[in-house]
Length: 315
Image 1 (cartoon, rainbow, N blue to C red):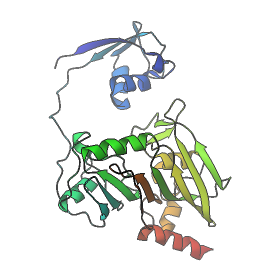
Image 2 (cartoon, helix red, strand yellow; image 1 turned 180 degrees about the vertical axis):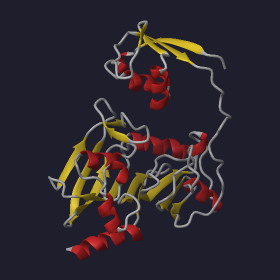
Image 3 (cartoon, rainbow, N blue to C red; image 1 turned 30 degrees about the vertical axis):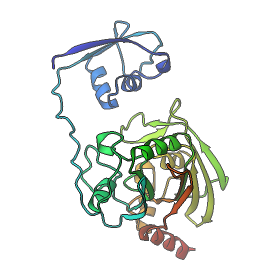
Image 4 (cartoon, helix red, strand yellow; image 1 turned 90 degrees about the vertical axis):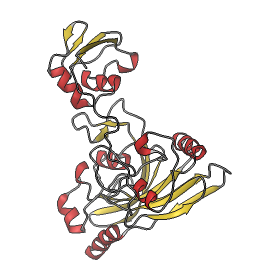
């Protein structure tokens, strides 16, 4: 494909945003790709070279020169393989849904760069088929847990269930309960963190509280306090990527073991944690076919219980 130039007006919704952030949203590129275009002189705003930190103005004209590229092969994602996933438990299955208890270290679905086990691989290994709705790599997936987060997940088996569950999550009709061990002692001990979340301005793979980000609301209550940490019951109104981790880090109480979001590596080592102390303990939703309320729970896994034991012994 030869180099081409795209000319487009800045929409009202991007007014005031940095050039790199706004272009990433507008073109669907990663921030890294956009920064490379800007620094290479390939982005003009009203005829002048743009800087990545310049601010966009509604109605201004953007000219973006895209270099010659080699198109990737279709579907560069790892192929889905039916393989047993140790620790993956099926809590419930019917013709519409399958509810699983996801162990740590397992992704919900395949993604670029991830070569480990996935929930979809594990379900295929035990003969559980899922809905074909959704992107090819995440068919049937209506919500996700991070690789480093364990607990209850629901996957759609029928197309009807996929649509109903996606609607339920979007309309906040699903109850999502987590347990999180966070550093220090949140004050107040019961409260709400209401802060918008979007991609981190400097790190593509992280998220942060960002002005103009997506509305994100987390409710928490400290249920047990230790000398160095607090165990919290957490419920979500929204379901942003890394929401609990980002919100607690933003208020100065990152999840224990969460080194990506400011967790103390010394404390993590003392607690024997190789991941964030975060567990999806309960999930409730209306069954997509008959509307009956269903609720499923998961106990803390061994590594998280071990960390609590260490804290309890320390007094």
